[in-house]
Image (cartoon, rainbow, N blue to C red; front, side, top):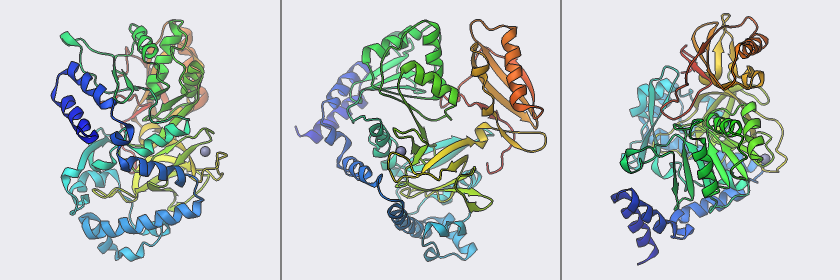
Length: 471
Ligand SMILES: [Zn+2]
C-alpha cells in the first residue's frame, strides 16, 4: 500500500466508523509522514512564507500590486456585482494599477454581502470548491459568505502555522485548544469535556463545560497530554486560570506560548493568563470573513499584518492614515470564489509607524476595537470603548462581566459574582465605572448566574443592540 492509499484508507475508516474505531483511524493517520499529510503545497507555501516575511516593504508592495491586478481582472470578468459596480462608476480593470487606486472602488459592507451575496460569487468557480461560512452583525442576523475550500483554515494552513513558528514551534508540536467545539459524547451519552486527537496531536478542551466543579478534569487532561502550546478565547483562558488559582493549583503544564484569538485580548487577561502559565501570549487578529490576519511575533510590539494574503487599508475621513485610529478595510488577494474587495471589517485599528525590532518587513498594527463589539454610544453621539473600564482591577471577586447597550447613553453591566463577593465589591465596581465613564453613561448593574456564550463560544464584552454605522 502506497502512502497516499494509507492516507485515504485512514480517512475512510475515520469517516465511516463509531468513536472507538475512529481513534484507530487517527493513530493510523498520525503515522503518515507530515510531508504527505500536509501535502506538497503546504511545504511550498510555508517555505515561501518563511522568506517573504523578511522582504522589504517595497518588494511586498510590488507583489501585492501584481496580485491585486489579477484579482481585479478576475472580479471584473467573472463576478456580476463587481462588473456592475465598475460599469456604474466608469472604471475599467486597467484603472486599478496599484493599491493607491483602490479608493476608486466603493467599500463593501456587511449589508451588501447580506443582500447581494449571490452576485458576489464568481461564475467560473465551481460551488463545490467553496465552503459556506457565516458571521453575525450587531443585530444578530447572520451574514453568509463563501470561502475557497483550499484556503479553509485548517491544520494545513501555512499562514496559521507561521505564527506557531514565531514562538519557536514546529509542525509536530503538541497542542491544546480551549474551544467551542462540540465533543463526541462518552458511552452512555455522558458529556465529554476533553478529547485528544493523536493524529493532530491536539487536546481539545470544551469551553462550554468549564466550571469550578470540574476544573480538576481540565488540569488532569493538561497534565496527561502535556501540550506545549495552548490556543483559546481570552475569556475562556481567563476563567480557566481563575479557577485554577482559586483551587490553589499550580500550573498543570509549562507551555512555551499561549495563542489567543477570536475575541479582543484585554490587558488584564494578558497579565492573568501569562502570569499563571509563565509564558508569553501571542495574540492573533482575524475574523470569520478571513480578509485580514495578523499575529504578534516574539517581540510583542503589535500585530504583524500578513501582507502576502491581503491589502489592509487604515482609513480615516476617506484617507489612508498611519499612527491614528482608523477603520480597517481589507482586500483578500487569494480569495477567488467570492472576492471581497475593500471589505469593511467594522474594526478600528492603527497602523504603526515603526518597524518591528524582530526585523520582519511585515507592517505592525494595533487593534483598537471592533465597533460592533466594544464601542458604546453616549447620549451626545460619541463612540466610547467600554474596554476603558477595568473591572478585574477594581475587584478580584467578579467571575465574568458583560455590557449590554439598548439605548443611547445607557448601559447594563451584567455581573457574575465570584466567591467572596460583597457589597464592598459593588461599591468598587461603581467607583471604577464613575472614574472611567464620568457622566457619559447611566450604568445599571444586573447580577446574573452566568453569561451565555454565543453559538461560536465567545463572550463578547459588549452586546450592542444599537445599529452601528457600516453594519
Ligand atoms: Zn516582529
